[in-house]
Length: 278
Image 1 (spheres, rainbow, N blue to C red):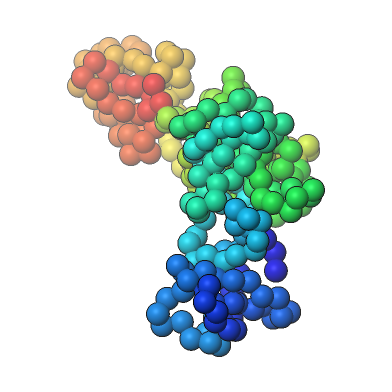
Image 2: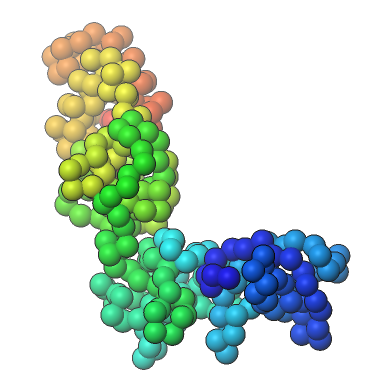
């Protein structure tokens, strides 16, 4: 019975302290009275999370934690002491991040993306913020153009790094970011490229997007990026000014602006047009 994982177990026997659950190998774990429902009967199957309590005894709970073994999550620091930082994982017991697993010293009240693992010396669940140590570069089971899940964990000059499908390392380049993205956000994104080193380039829009929008829309978007994310032109601007700036009619410009707005790539203000992340 794996510590740190969710299991479907069978109610085997009751005691004063709760109900003992059993797996198909005969291993038992206690479900304390606080989590035993009135309608649980012996022989019933129940879904529980198994972990070590504060006295290092295996116990089960019906509460779904914020993180499980071998997974990533964005968690809040509740306490810091000599042992390290303690994160809220949704249970009574908190999750330790030793100082050696903190690339940046963690602070109470702040949230960080971490990976949950089993400490080989103590068999306790701990967490690490050394994200790159726990992502894979082999065994990628998706292709360019596929939709994947990304958990964003670090910003850099290149863009924003993400854990892809809870396993792989991805990056959305700055040039492909058209809206604000915060650390800890989880979104469905699209595979733009799989590099020889096993890292994955991502986009926020489907890979076929640039083929779907017309040339005028792309031209307006390129101009907006060139102008550092803002220009004063809107669908109410003078037609001659639009033609001089973009080389297109006001009707074509309005259509392009409309396409970008629907894709949430831009936002329209009284003073002009902005990239959504500006």
